[in-house]
Amino acid sequence: MSNTKIAPSLLASDFGNLQRDVEMVNESAADWHHIDIMDGVFVPNISFGMPVLQAIQKHATKTLDVHLMIVDPDRYIKTFADLGADILTVHYEACTHLHRSLQAIKAEGMKAGVALNPHTNVNVLEDTINDIDVVCIMSVNPGFGGQSFIENTYDKVKALKELIIKKGAKTLIEIDGGVTSKNAAALTEAGADVLVAGSFVFKSENPIETIKELKSIAG
Ligand code: DX5
Ligand code: ZN
Image (cartoon, rainbow, N blue to C red; front, side, top):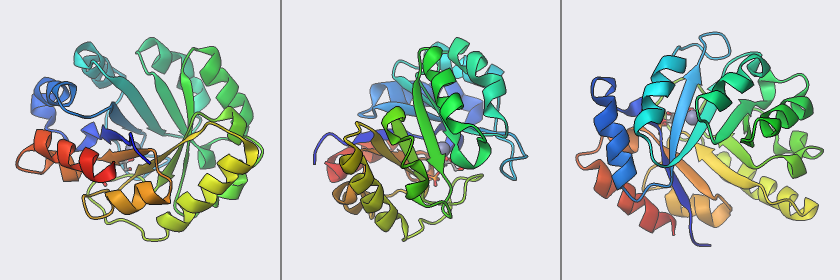
């Protein structure tokens, strides 16, 4: 497998130097900007909202991968489209009518993503997988950066890959949480297409080099 995408998570960036950090990602080997929106209800933390996304969008030159950790995401689908999101990911656990949410995201011209909490089995996507552009497998409990990687993720990636193949879907598999140079190769080997990395990139001495390193390890 080659061409794994790297998506640095701006949650771990220096918000006082947000433009600088967005431009660093622009200039790096990264593929996407991963943007974590938290509401303090779906997850026990609040990150940032629309005005900050607008500021990011002004400087970002790569795909905007927006991960909504919020209840009732349907309320904001149009807002995020207007803010320039290219991919909009909602949580399976936050959507009573997931199929409808996916259609609404696509109707706004965005790619549709679904994130799964660590406790959610990939089989719940059996009937929607052909409508999903990206499945984001949470490899930590959502809400915070810098947590350690949950090892059961490998089995989930393999099971999801099987489901995608069985259904003839074109869905990408994204891994979010605790990604480092230690697990990147094993994750792509298991079937991951996109690796999100927050702290590992932004807390490193040379983020540009760290992104390059992740990209080459992931293959
Ligand atoms: C967690 C977020 C992640 C987070 C990843 O709720 O969805 O995107 O920023 O951060 P690290 O790579 O530090 O685990
Ligand atoms: Zn995320």
